[in-house]
Length: 395
Ligand SMILES: *Cc1c(COP(=O)(O)O)cnc(C)c1O
View: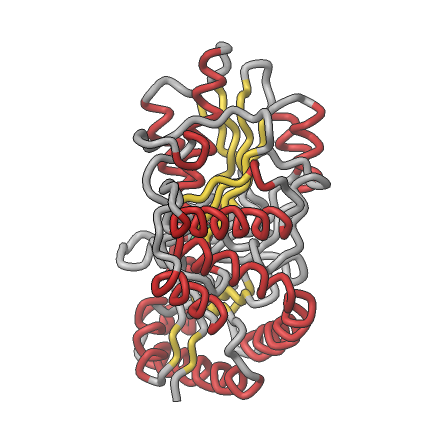
């Protein structure tokens, strides 16, 4: 029996999203820029999707730009604020050490272009402190970018408070909300957000499509030059099937959010309680302020990769860090950022539950992880040294 427990990496498309994509491909294949009826019909659908997406996050339709996904939205928001800052002599950007690489690598690139970047520490609970954001703001700060919820440890940041700090100091605020959109109640007005990134495939929509919210008046420059699509902010014929699939998925997610969130929290807390029974283990990040489906653990004396492979043999799809870091031998920058030492960070496991998971899945996962951890420890030299007292336990 297969159990998919990696919803932070991607989700299966919902039936409603799939229907919207297929209907568009079959019937509404016109180019929204064409003037005949087929094109105008496509244009209407495109603008309808923009209204639906905007309403879910309390934005105006004209504040939504459709993109190829979360990475593009992150790049565009950060580059737009940076370019505008540079024009005004402001070249300092504040972010955190545990952002997604779409943010971190964009910032690294901007550093090589002359920007100065302050990466705030994240506390052991996986949370950024608004007062530390405030203390880092300087007269030449043009942007603060802090993720809404972390993709590895699931911790939900105090976005409203950080937004208030940025507003008070008149600094632009971007949040990568790819893990939160469709799962958390987002209100860009109340939360004082200037830019927000989201991606459809994280909320049961299609891959390769997302959106950027940019508050009206916030600087916005295109990354891709060409035609006048998206009011000149993103050239290229619109991915209408993807956009309609995304809008359908977001609407559906918003509709089931409250009840699904309660259901997932119960599954999550049971999973956390079960895995805590494993000796020398620890939950990563705050137990309460985390996404309803996220469970992230470290187990001492094992390798996360071996754990994943053996779980896969038992039919369980999980992750050791983010999908983007798996395949590299470096421990996750997120776990290091919250203060896990290398050896402990190597023994990490991320289980992210979603719409298709059941209470039975959770019991199977608990039993399987217990078995596999005990098996791996039975022949681990690191574990033997810990047992002998040669090296001290950390967890
Ligand atoms: C998945 C993810 C991204 C990248 O989104 P894509 O649509 O895959 O480009 C960015 N940020 C976070 C937090 C993510 O989880």
